[in-house]
Image 1 (cartoon, one colour):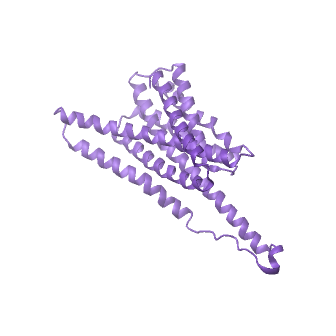
Image 2 (cartoon, rainbow, N blue to C red):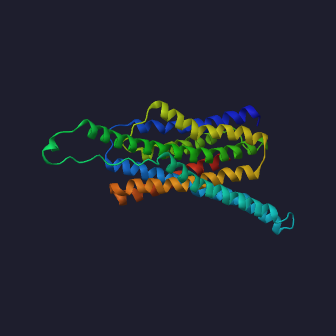
Image 3 (cartoon, rainbow, N blue to C red):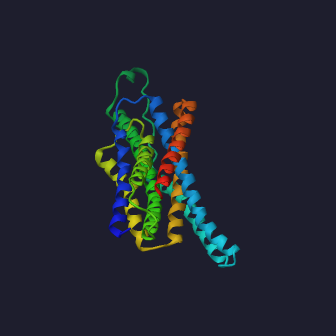
Amino acid sequence: MSFAETALLGAIAGFTIFLGLPLARAEGLSIRARVGLSMLSAGILAFLFMDVGAEGLGIVETHLDAFKADEASLWPVIGLFALMSVGFLAGVGGVATAQRRMGSRANAAPPIAGGESTAVVTAAELADHRSAVSAVERRALRTAMVIAVAIGLHNFAEGLAIGVSSQAGEIGLATVLIIGFALHNATEGFGIVGPLGEIRPSWKWLGLAGLVAGGPTFLGAMVGYQVTSDALELLFFALAGGAILYVIGEIWNGVRRLGHTELGLYLLGVGFLLGVATDLVVAYGGA
């Protein structure tokens, strides 16, 4: 496959993430629907966590097999494991640190008026209320953008795999493969918008989130066509895995206060199985 064809496949695979993003503009969703959508996105992310973990371990195990066969030393295994550990911890702890610093100023809840003033909302109280609402919106948007970044890291690593495989002539532009990537990345779009709840982001924000999450697939495919690096691929898998694990915890913390736990757990399972099903379509296409 040529470089141009590889770039086209990477662009198609990355662009389809936009298919799931317009759902964030939907109005009138009930609490049950918001919980279901959030946990569906958590299920999709749980599959991605399993997927990146398997891919990363596969890279390390390949070098371990070479050592067992006396074809290489143990140092590459140790080095790759250390790189995976650093990347994973950076993905978990680094995202948490960034979130804490961005939201370091905790906004106090609006004061409750008492006595004869209960019927009157002062300008200061109204400003406090608006500040609290704005803080909730900013946190939701930050969490969703962190999800987009985590998915982008995953997709960059997947793009590297696309580029390496196509350069070796192992992938064709089969229709079923393109459909598989479209389905798979569309579900990742749902993963981004799920935690937003009642927040309706602007089209500009959705466009940025789509570029952050989907653009790395295109970039990774082009880099992978030119450069073959197990270490680079493993680093991005590890970063993605750590960030995704952190985000799953954030989603759960956000929805557990809303109730409907049983429904949420069922949708968590549905999201995971949806990720598996779309990945099988990709695998059937030859990826």
